[in-house]
Image 1 (cartoon, rainbow, N blue to C red):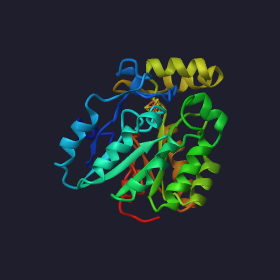
Image 2: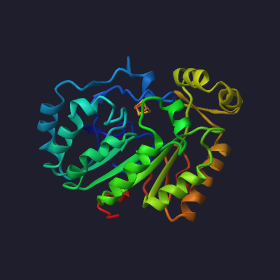
Image 3: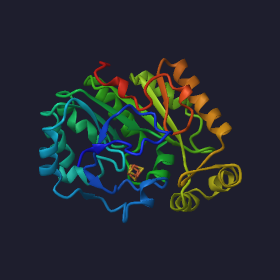
Image 4: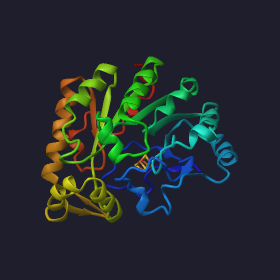
Length: 284
Ligand code: SF4
């Protein structure tokens, strides 16, 4: 259930050593750009992991203070979680174990569990791709609106839980200049922002084309003529990625936030550990 994060030790990943687990297989937020849909069958049909709770109980007793990142292939707070409460049960187990918790989510449901997050060293990374609810609805149809995620960030910080924001993915012509978003999150008390650009894969590109045909038309040459094939992804050209990330770094610097890039090959722009895990143990 709990395994090493990035066991392949990808050159592009600059995360500190950590463990990871996913309470669910699949995710019902149905983001059009989702990468996991290409390797997990029926990904948008969210289902709990088999024997989740007994397995986690057995494995959690063996933890020795590691960071456990939840989750990296699916959201730990899908809409289904409101009914099952399984993530809450997982946190109950982890709060009695020797570990630090890093949560990565798009859902304001995480605020339900502030009591448990306060019991163990924890940090939450909220993915907020845009401050425009309408844009969010187009690209993340069943995830909570951006405004709800911003309110969740405020609530977490009010409870003393260090919180960072991921602007991921950044899609040129859509959400590539998050000037106002960074100003807003800085005012809330966010201390770290992570940026990452959209990487095209056949299935997510098809969904992007259907949802945003005009944007896709402009993106096409950037990805399919000038882009860079990296593994099974097509990246934007490096110069453009550099410009986009440099802009976010400048905005972060201006507002006193630390900054990290995720899987861009641009880690020299980072001013703290890319995933915001430096916030573990910090008080807001
Ligand atoms: S929240 Fe994450 S895992 Fe869920 S559909 Fe969106 S990108 Fe995929």
